[in-house]
Amino acid sequence: MNFWKMNGNGNDFVVIDRDGMAYGQLVDLTRRVCRRRRSIGADGVLVVEPSDNSDFRMRVFNSDGSEGEMCGNGARCIARYAFERGIAPFEMSFETIAGIMKARVEGSFVNLDMGEVDLGKGWFGRKVPMAGGEVEADFLIVGVPHLVIYLEDPDKVDREDLTRWGRTLREDRGLFPEGTNVNFVGPVDRRSLKVWTYERGVEDLTDSCGTGSCASAVVAVRRLDLESPITVYNPGGVNIVTANFREDLCDIVLGGETVVVAKGTIEEEA
Image 1: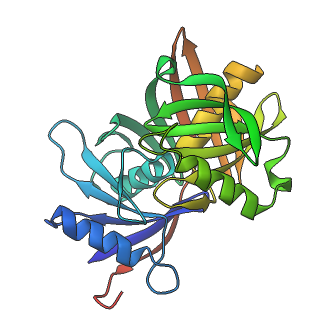
Image 2 (image 1 turned 90 degrees about the vertical axis):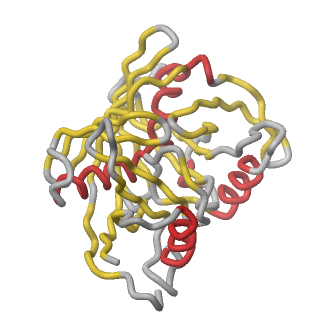
Image 3 (image 1 turned 180 degrees about the vertical axis):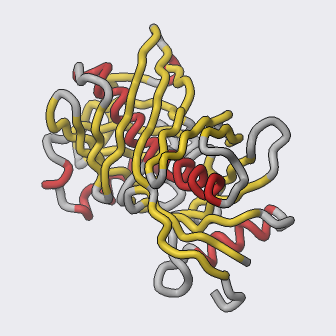
């Protein structure tokens, strides 16, 4: 099977065409090829499928085999893949479980129109348990659920602590019946943030999360009076998030670089 290895700010993926594989085969393939050191290694697998109403359909499988509704960095990568493979024009639309996405490919840089986010489906300023006490947090659904927690500077917190806090909150079924991604956010100035994300499905901190960047930027504009567009510094690179508010709705555009790391064939042994 042919594949591309791609990443968006270090959030890495194996990208393939479905080629008639059954759902169970995709789940099994994902679990096997995402193993680092023993196979290709990735945070997830992106799958291109035909679509009746868009240029194509994107499926997102996390490294544990679970299927995600949406992935911002993955969507930017698959848009470039589809354009360079001749599957879609440089301005395209594609299906996801979270809805129709639109993208514009400009070389390695991809702008992704995330569509409309309903702020009324989230909540703001609630206390959640963390580190033996409580912290104030916000919650928003940007295709997938995201909890946003504010820290003075996430880079100065031990990675093991961020991982432990993220895992504990992600698994709190009382607060989040379907689980959640957890973002640790530190404002830099009026137009920029630092964000570390613990990703559901990967079950670890990742170098970057596109939907996490979007959720963090949107709540920072609303709660901290930051100014859009927001530059989001992830450990793996930079995302640019533009947020346009209309009462309880917000239109979001996510921009950032994509990287094609390798193209090849997945061998049966992998």
